[in-house]
Image (cartoon, rainbow, N blue to C red; front, side, top):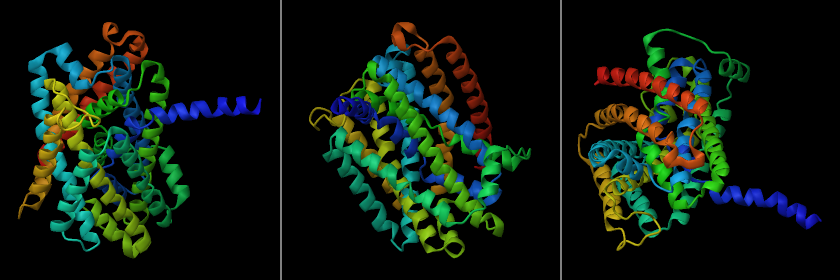
Length: 415
């Protein structure tokens, strides 16, 4: 009897861990170097006043990722595959070209974040960037899907450095919880731009392709959809908790001083005299981890997407000879992305701004195509969206497109 009870309790846990991974990794890797910079600036400049925005941000993240997970388990095909089959080669080719250029710029931005994070520890970019590039290249080239996923999940745990850093900053918890629950609406341009930036950095085009491709390669079946949805929810909550503590750490220490910061590396350095070297060091370690994490997944996502769109073989469980285009594309993106950062006088800030503009242009098209696919019963079968949920998702998509247009306009203005 005891053995039967134990089996009934343990089986759901084992089943969940057999499915967990794709959504959890995707949600957390989007807390990359530019994302951490956005959250750090939000906390430093606006204190705790924007914490309430994390609730709608969590809803947006979960809904968009749920759509991709749903399509992956229902069709056993990646997003680029479905777009090619349902909308034709021309649409797919345009999307893949835009995604390739955008993700190359994003990859360069992640290596720039790695260089800045390593500089805090006195490590030259000419050492940190090549070594980081080599490590993430070997990780994918030599690993299988299972081994790479386990390493990525461990990398997610390094984000716990931010909650610890936030606690070491000794915030006013009463004020934190009050402003996290009660919205403070400040209708001025700088607050609006930052608010849209917080939501906008949560959803990037590459995420949808990577998540769905990972669900397919992991082999998650339609019968496991409920567990895949839990992967989405838990991953989203974990990612937003990390964002919460990044903002809290900077709000507690930097906001009262009025100190201006422009990126996450400056935030980590500024924390040292205010919150202690441990808080500052943990913040910097989180930045390094985020940059390396994203610099490995962005090229991987791009390789999945391009190969799906063209119809080439792809996947970490395939040897090089079976999927040469997949591995060569991954390698090229890492080499070029890291190489751009090492060019003397490279305009890294402009590269990051341009990548944000391209993300802004690409995202609305991808969201619309996703919903058109997810509402087709002939494609989705029993996992087709219900009408109320579809209406809600369309409304959310329209809102995201409006916010995205606002963010795109503000970014173009800065360039």
